[in-house]
Length: 161
Image 1: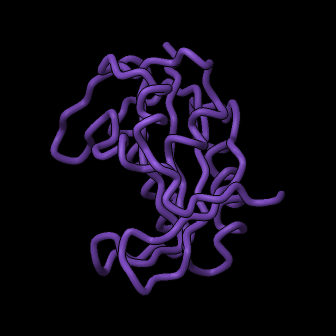
Image 2: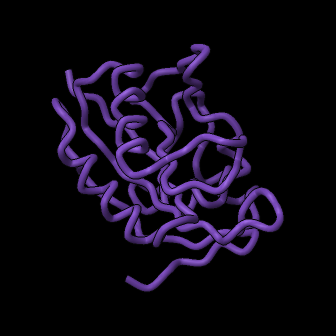
């Protein structure tokens, strides 16, 4: 059975917009998965001072992969695009996070869905809002409209195509 999954993308190294475009193409090549939609690209400040601004987006996938199999595939894409994990929230060529996985609530050591701190991440919420209906409710019962109302933009800017 295919599930509707949302993946957050972010990059602040090595031509970030191009990194995201390459990631969209790679997502479209995943087995048992269809890339259904992508949001616009957004610019956002880093969570840590002194880093370059990020380019962010959200992709909608329809996949038959299990959650951890999808996570492994996403980490493979990150590695293929030069991701090196040196420090938490450090600069990166590509970050791919499973934001929502159908109606599932997942609490595994390697994967938490809905993604933790989703409510505080304008760079995820606003692109996500482009891909869902106005009344969208997360699997944990939170309404996206409420999360958006409570989350300031914090320098988030929609980028020109």
